[in-house]
Amino acid sequence: MNETLTDKQCPNCNSYLYYIEYDTEIPYEGKITIKTYTCKTCYYKNVSIQRHEREKPKVMLLRITGKNDLKTIIYRSPDAYIKIPEIDAEISPGIASNGYITTAEGIITSIKEKLSLMGNNKETKVLEERINNILKSNSEEITIIIDDDSGKSKINSSKAKVIEKPI
Ligand SMILES: [Zn+2]
Image (cartoon, rainbow, N blue to C red; front, top):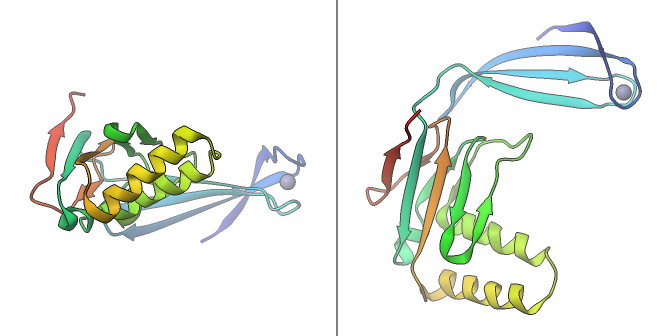
């Protein structure tokens, strides 16, 4: 890993930024290059990941109909949108979001946690209760939809439907 001083300036303090490039290989994503601009004065950092292996854009659907479905292992790539239409939930890929491995239950729980940050009104309370019941007793069936233009996300279940997106 070597550092080079660039002519780009830090957005915070205008010092010149250093550039670091690092190649590595990670599960699910394959070969990647991590590109970092860093400021040695204020510790500003800008990290971007370049992938070298792409797959076809796809949409994956997993219908949650029973407790076992909640345990399904899911890899969410940094580019993936997650939607659960029945509870009107969507998780967008953040600016610097990383890929991660989780379960269907983990995704639903993270939606519930986001909900509790949105305040304490009646609607969020009702929705929170619905999500609790889905997690506890499968009170209703929901669909987890993963929309991923990088095609890297995976749902580890034979029940999952995969639809290739037209490019
Ligand atoms: Zn700086």
